[in-house]
Image (cartoon, rainbow, N blue to C red; front, top):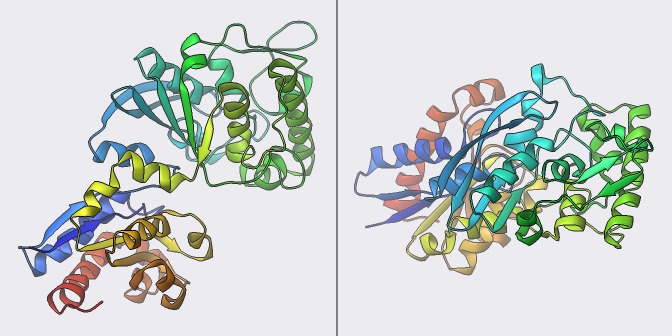
Length: 377
């Protein structure tokens, strides 16, 4: 029996990773019902990371937190044993901004800290945080506040949440940090190598994506510099120039400098969490993909991470994307033997996104016919 491992990332704005896998599987099975299809959706550390863990057998834990601008958000994290997987995007991400309206200066990561605190209270000793899709540039200050840290102004009052308010902060008090947070092992799923500060830092590079104009960018950079100064005074370490600390609006900086977090590529982290290697061991073919297969995909995104793992195991890989601007000649070095795009079937991107499930079903039929029944690669 031929075993096909379906390990796509989400098609953003269209289908979840699990829906993509199911649509491909339905197409394959409609051609040959004897095929064994295994759906194991993946993510690169951003939104979809918790869902990937849950699909792989982790428990989903419901929790309520404050969204990026303080509104109530019902979210969840994944847990197995003493490990919890927390996703920034589903707690304080851009997609959670009310009516999509950014608040570059006021948005914070406080809600992320609330989710982490819930996981710690439930007994988690290892916290994996998926970074990506952040709505804020607060250096992780909000997250740390939710975990018991105090950030005060010259009058001894707590500063407001958000990166803009950090300009007026004068002291970081870590004495109230939760003991469970001090003792836990933190890991960051992160693909960004920007430092916290400067022209390639969190505010300058990613602030505009969060609605910051020129003046707000100056305020945020000022806030991040002041925050870095306070963290250095509190911890004795200056890590603001460390590659990767600018990830998720500087959330990585707060996690690394204060919580001792270690960062690793997002897809590597997710593949470990879902025990991808075990599923791969008995696979005859791997199908992966994402909404847009482009130049960025070649630098650490989910499909290439899956392809790396499959190539190491000697298993052929096929990619399926909503759209693709990367030719097969660029993909072959990663062990990818064929590549499909939904826009090949429906050139209008609006229609291909709307009808993605139907088109993926058709691609699944093609895969089963061309690459399995006829045995081509």
